[in-house]
Length: 419
Image 1 (cartoon, rainbow, N blue to C red):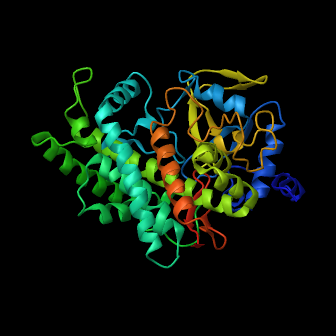
Image 2 (cartoon, rainbow, N blue to C red; image 1 turned 90 degrees about the vertical axis):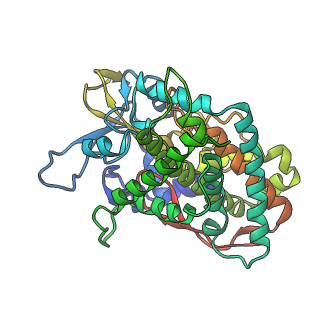
Image 3 (spheres, one colour; image 1 turned 90 degrees about the horizontal axis):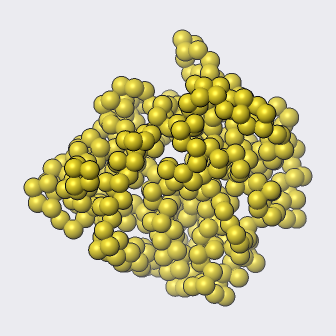
């Protein structure tokens, strides 16, 4: 039975509610089938959100689930604005005032200004060094894996790879790296679907504050003594007469860690799972790793969709399929659904490393908010899987992944592996 047939054979709940946390605990095939039914509609569906506090008025969102609609929204930043916040829940105003605005929550002209500062910091010399660092990190991780017994792929391989690359690229000293990694886990715990265990109040915010304090310390040192790293380039830049101040640097670093580490780590873990579960695709890749690794990485990202959704706010009334979205209302761009759109991808539930073209939205729907780290993530995945498959050709998942139910990201907590 193919993945497509298996998904279609599963029962679909007619009352699937994307705002209900229980929906995100359903098996993946059930969720995919529910999204397929929503894509068959000719207009977005409005879902009422369940607010945690009875004091807050109930709100809701329009679900954009078709590839064309998600792309159109991403490329219409004056209609679908990011300013109020793109995550669920939106960041509180006092949090943004205290910690600074992440680039994903900004609109032009401020977004464009910050993006120019960051983009121009990636000089040809820095890019060349990052590329070599990526290859060296992949070699070192596989060296460590080969010298040990198999265990958890996330902890031993998929987690360390993007984290070490980003810390080295930024110029974070070795000593605080372990502490920062723990802080990343604490800062992102709110993105999962709520479970019964109580979360420690304020732990995520304290972790975020600590992360930003650590990077601000490094930034102050680099202003005095610049080095050959990204933090030095960012704080000493002169783009439109400015570089990044300490708060902007902290917000950017937090974004890099959360977006760059979490998403790439998850994509790598899903990648190994997919190669293990589709032996014919694995054999195809093994027959020509260098020639097919690029296509394999793109398909891993499309199939796993590390970021499930981002939200936007309507700046003015807008019509989609004869359905009017009103000014001030929320629209959620479901990248995971768009990446399974049968009008764009033949047999969309199948894992096919030769898929071409592959216009997936794993890095966003285009427009000014297209993922700034897309090229870096692709490089990391290509380098790591090339190193793994050529040096440890028997590497594979040894069991099912432990997933974290979430409406935001497709997170893998752990994945047993062997070689």
